[in-house]
Every structure is written in structure tokens, then in C-alpha cells.
Length: 292
Image 1 (cartoon, one colour):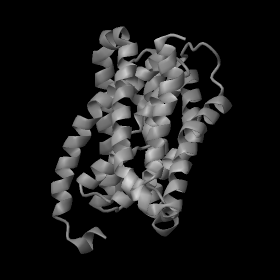
Image 2: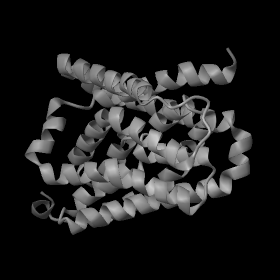
Image 3: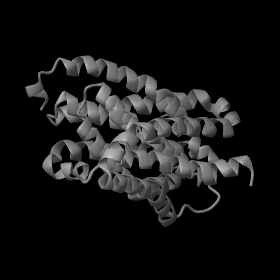
């Protein structure tokens, strides 16, 4: 087994399981119940994640005329759930962190259905030449095993010992962030030639998708009369996807499919960070009564 095969079949799934497990340590069943208690914000946010973001990815891939495999990778990224980094930047931006966590939780579970669905649609739409026909059932099972299962384990550990989980969570998230950086670096290094040859178009497409997703989702949230803090959380969820999901699933299709997510990850902190800084000042000016 060569180094690239080890990275794809062993390190990537383990890395994603660690990241999802660390997310589980921060979740409770109450985070899922919030969709019933505060339905409007959650439903609008999840609709943006599960519908608007993937469709934007299709549009951006068409706009830049990406190679079919890169186009599939961009859609796969757009269909991936939010991640813990979105929760962190929402907190720093003084957005509604509880809403962010709920959207991450729901989209992570829904990914077992949405990711294989949009992956299949993208392969068919762009006519991507993949080694074998993409099996929706197989991809769904893979997503379930490396996202929902470790997420559930993390939640179970927290439910059994909340004090231990509270202590372990910060360390687990630091480990998860380090693993995330290694995954992104590994994806870029493994296909460095293709990345360097297409960096311009991939970077342009990634930045366009990132900015458009944050801008449109924020506008939709405000038009729906959500607060600035809620709109901030929704925009962050669409700006900071769990790119490790896209890389892990993309690697099971073709190594080139992983590249858009890796390139996107290299830029999303800059654009999302700038947005967070602007919104932190704006949200800080909101009176507590108006923010509730």
C-alpha cells in the first residue's frame, strides 16, 4: 500500500472521526430540540446549508468552467455540513452561537443523505469520469460511519460524564484543528502538480463560492427578519464548511475531487475572519434585549 493509499483509506477517515467526535463532546440532545423551540432561525439556516450552498457550488463551477472532477469537488464541498470552526468564529463575531451549534449538529446528521445525493447529481451533471459508478448507498454508508457514528459517540460520552467532557472538549478541539490542517496539507501535497497548474481558477472559484454563500445567506436571513446575530451564525455556517468531509468522501471517488475543498480551506479563514471582525463590532453594539 503506497503513501497516498494510506492517506486516503486510513488517515482521512481517522482524522474525520476525531473531528466529529470532538464536535459530539460539545453537543446535547437540546441542540437538536432547538429546531422545535426556535424553528424559524434553524429552518432558514439549515435550508441555506442543504439547498442554497450546493446550488451555489453548481453555479460557481459552471461560471468558471471547471474541469468536471474539480466541479464535482466544489459541489461536494458546498454540500458538506458546517463545522466546529463555524461555531468558533460565530462566537468571536458575537453571533448566536447556540444557533450555529444546532445547524452544525443537524447538517452533520443530514450529511448521510445530502452528501451522496449531491455527489451523484454532480457526477451526472458534469459528466465526470470516475473509476466506478458512484454508489449512493455506499457513499451514504461511508458518510454515516465517519460522521454520524463518532458524533454520536462524543455525545454519549458527554451525556455519561459531563464534567469529563467539559475538560476534554477544549483539548479535543485543538487536536481536531491540528488534524484538520494536516488533512488539508496532505490533500494539497498528494496532488501538488494539479493544484499548482489550476491554482488560479480554483482559488477564484473557492473565494467566489465562499463570499457568495456568506453574503446571500446573510441577506436571506435578514429578509426573513432574523436578527443580525442569527444572520451572522447562518453566514458563518455557509462560509466555514467541514471541508474534511468533502476531502474524505472525494478521495473515495478520485483524488482530484479533493482539491477544491483543500484550496477552499486555504482561503476561507481570511474571508470568514474578515466578516467575523466586521460583525463583532456590529453585534457588540446591539443591546441585549434586541439580541434576544
